[in-house]
Length: 130
Image (tube, rainbow, N blue to C red):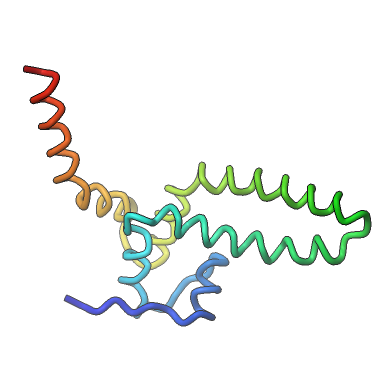
């Protein structure tokens, strides 16, 4: 088995902003997209992107601070809702950019949870179908 090589903080920031990583991080991209916490990781990347927009808005846009803060909060709420709605497609696109075929991340996540789902279905069948 190959060792998964994490990107440096600068490369991770580039990755979080939508950039591609070098081929040596290919396995890490798949790892990042298929962990049980993949949605939280996607959410964290979105927060990094939004943070880069928030600071200039709060500091440079004229007007009362409370207006700027509430506008920023509303922007965050709308953006994070959109991020959660598009998480599957966005993560699949990142995996494709790393060189994997379409659907790989979803397939790996499905395979990882197949045993648990089969056991849960068996428990359900024993309890409610007999």
